[in-house]
Image 1 (cartoon, helix red, strand yellow):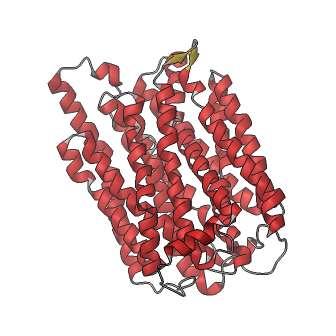
Image 2 (image 1 turned 30 degrees about the vertical axis):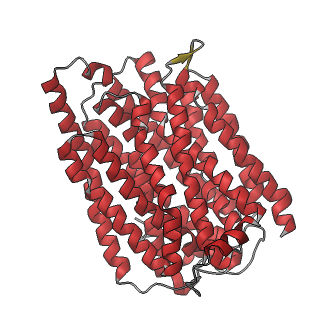
Amino acid sequence: MVICFNHVTFTDFYLTNINQVNTKERVVPKEFILPFIFITSCFALWGFANDITNPMVEAFSRIFKMGVSGGTWVQVVFYGGYGAMAFPAAFFIRRYTYKAGILMGLGLYATGALLFIPASFIGLYYPFLIAYFVMTCGLSFLETSANPYVLFMGPDSTATRRLNLAQAFNPMGSITGMFVAKTLIQARLDSRGADERALLSAEQFEAIKMQDLQTLSFPYIAIGGIILAMFLLILFTRMPKNGESTHNLNFFGAVKNLLKVKRYREGVVAQFFYVGAQIMCWTFIVQYGQRIFMEQEGMTSGDAAQKAQFYNIIAMGIFLVSRFICTFLLKYIPAGKLLMSLSVGGSVLALGTILFTDINGLYCLVGISACMSLMFPTIYGIALRGMGEDAKFGAAGLIMSIVGGTFLPLLQAWIIDRGTILSFPAVNLSFIMPLICFLVIGLFGYRTYKIHFQES
């Protein structure tokens, strides 16, 4: 899906860095076009994994008769894999190459996906959690390698715009993952909710559970085969060695250098809260929509989840379009200022998500995706700007901050499981968590615009 874009005229369109306008430097130099396309394809592949998995919180909750908190352990292990493997991945990349890191990531990704085969036959929850963990250890390698690798595929002055361009294809994989989750998984699962399944006999429940687990597993097994094909493609392609001038493992020296930079320290914190906000908004939109459609339209739990997932796909489409628009706007608006403005917009929409208890609240939740589109790559690019070889360990810190997707959704799930709070839907009140996240990100954008790049 990524290889089809017009790589010469398209990249010519995206010029300039985050502070300058009308520079003639290419975002992607001609000699790096093919490697850039292959690495950008990996952005789409991990986007698929992220967003086929978010709706599985509701699916596993239903299949195993658990509350939202139980299903959220999918997210705990999924994003926990990022945190556990980020610095080992950085050591590996520093010792070898970015290409080696990407191959290791693809290998672990494929292994985790294929572990769904035994997990579906065992029929227990925990083997699936192990499969997710292995898979995301691979995603951690991929993101720790690919993000800084893209930064080095051209001049430093266009690095942030180059990363925004590569990240623009991540939502394409995400939309595909959401569509597959809706049409190949949610639509084919038994529509009975956890409460209805609790009324079944043990034999009936076991039969439905095993069928549902096989349905859920098939797309993961299929993507495992695709990942193996991508592994071979990159293995036999000559890749550039930019940013790989040394393989010395001076970890403590690199960390010391990184911690001296305020915008890096603050960028790690902002990224933690951004990832948490993204996962919460894209995971719990299902529970948010379920309540509306079950109460106001009388739908079953399964049908309501499918309809809510449709809105999630719309949100991702908005995210994709907004990513390209915001990448264009970076040509004219400093990154920190735009990041701050979008954070304000996200905060207002999160407030609407909390206060509206009808379809208008769902519209606000969908709209948040437009504000989130710029955030991850821009925070990343700001934090790593000018880091050189230290970017390998710097990238690990930023990828490790993805554990925000582990802890913050667990807190939100705990709120949702309360059902109602002071006669108000708990799922609505739970979106105070993303609201707090956007306020933190807005502060980082303000400090970037007003302080950090004034000092550099």
